[in-house]
Figure 1 (cartoon, helix red, strand yellow):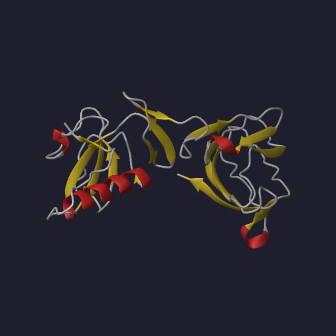
Figure 2 (cartoon, one colour; figure 1 turned 180 degrees about the vertical axis):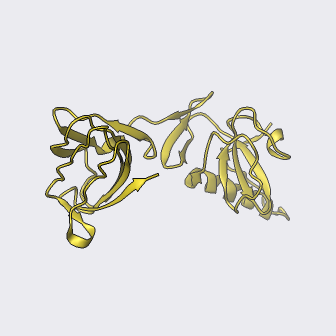
Length: 222
């Protein structure tokens, strides 16, 4: 059975090996304030980096991982893996999204979206609405010309936003009218590929709540 991640270890006055609980607590603190790489990896990584953190998945394998319990928090430190059992209410960052341990599972915290989630954009009468609260990645496969792009739920003042949009061309070439707020690398507005099924990647970044978007387009991916 893994040691619970909380409470932190303590040691009595006069203990000769204070480094043992001190290092143990340092690992707990690193897990709770660090970035968990994944909760879906089943095979113990072959070449982990110092400080790598995972949530142990079901059906896990590996020389050390096999001895851990699913849902444990595991950290690679000093050439070996250490696992700690979560306790109800503990919150960790998993690849940019916050998860709370319910006592039986890791559950995404409402209001803290997984920024790596991919959302499908569905134009309505030529208007594409991008809800920035959904994450940073979007796909767009229009069946008519895009006449307008609007943004909702932009980050608060003082925060930036970077979005990636995968554009897939229709069998009939569709055009896109870019917002005036888009400022393009090189000064010329990007033009989407016209070939049937062509895939372009549009990257946009704003530092001022969407007043200005710095935009680039990479075209015609195979």
